[in-house]
Figure (cartoon, helix red, strand yellow):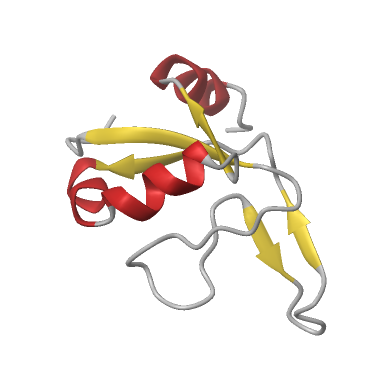
Length: 89
């Protein structure tokens, strides 16, 4: 694994589009807009996204709000690591 310290592990919730804060426009946690039709969104609720401690420190409020209001699901490091081991090599 890398030397990056992660503060959170998150996954999307179907129907809730949450930006990946600080990464630029159009980057979402566990969701993608269709290139040809941006009104079409595909969610991958099984994808677990690790959030580095530095990113969480900077964007703590919006991440905490999204978790609290149910727009993002908090996951564990163990779930994240298990998801990595299930990826094809």
